[in-house]
Length: 231
Image (cartoon, rainbow, N blue to C red; front, side, top):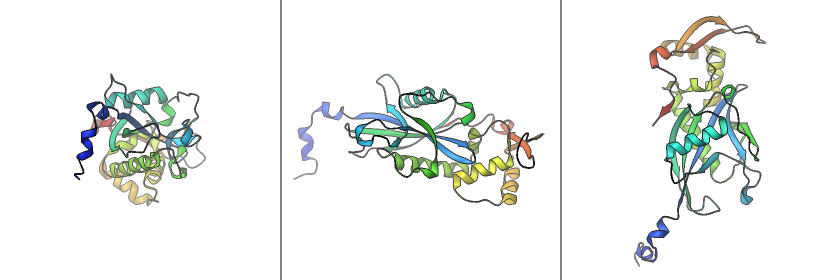
């Protein structure tokens, strides 16, 4: 028997019974930790487990529009960095039926956003403290985190996670939290000054419990603006 023989039993309508969704891995940085925005799942099979923010794609919107809609509804922001990462389509990944999802990751400055609360609990959770999630969302989170780690090596996307003014200590702490390694302070600073990504503001930190450090900003003159979106 041919492996395609069963296809004769399917009608055209069967092929259009597959739902399409988008899931957004929204990263933020707070208290020297890389965090992800998660919500408590309200589906019976995963009741109480953390899940990513996502939704089905509406008939009148494209994938990018659906992703930005979710970001707007949950964070109040629509001008944020967003990158499409991978498609996840295991047959039994959703208990309601066949759902193929497009995973994106987004980078936001936590202090700039305002969470749009719903009946479910919405929470910024440390990435390294999440051991189990609903659906295949742990796999999606891990995949997007790996993409972010690859990205920060040669692309200034991290500045989307920082305030407009920041110290080198904050910048190094951010990289360490993303890469999950300890970086040498001297080598880290030398590398950044060589890349010309920073502008010295000739200002010092205020109201900090340690010796005030110099403040810097992202070199927009070199890149035009903070990178917001990569196809």
